[in-house]
Length: 138
Image 1 (spheres, rainbow, N blue to C red):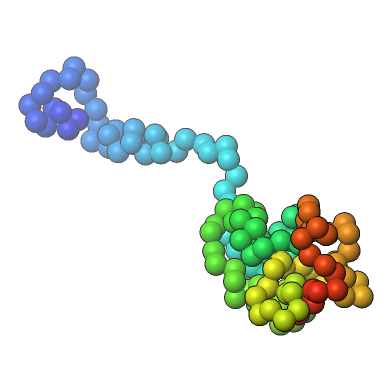
Image 2: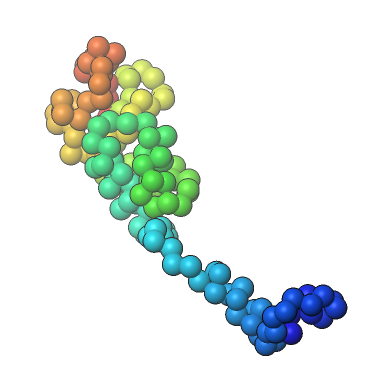
């Protein structure tokens, strides 16, 4: 018996008591063709950050790494502390102007040779904005 029939409204269709629930649950079983995002564990965060840097392929700001991380995982998460941990272990470095306390870009350790960022990893216009001698990597 349908909900409408219990209220005294004739629908002309007789249903079994569970049909209403079955019809509702069938509507929710529509196949989703999109792949669900992969949820990450704490240990995976650092690996995904390294992958994000590889995908960006240039010296970049934290916000750019954050955007790429969110795009890869599909799960927005604050990665600042994981970045700092990678920096303490010297997997990634912070580019800082000498005499300043604030960093400019994050880079992978492999992108820096003899204290100079390799040309292939410099963002567009980098040489016109920064002098290689005035930069240090921590």
